[in-house]
Image (cartoon, rainbow, N blue to C red):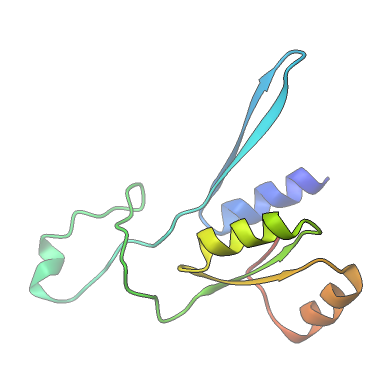
Length: 114
């Protein structure tokens, strides 16, 4: 059930999840998220912009509105990795306590909870 929830949330945020599996070797789940949406500008440069949803341009500028993600994980190293990789483009809140998470979810609207 957890994987189906992750798959649906990943799709909602424009990402993808895939599986690589080997008999007697285990399985690897690959989670991919876009770092930015295509840049749409009304300036003269917009005619030259060839970005499409399939190939988003990566902007170093911070967006005006962040997608809010709540990441629940008891492993501090995993929380740190997710925060480091996604915090430039997403507003990341992490927590390791189910009790605290219930309080956080009641106070903040998240776009995804992982």
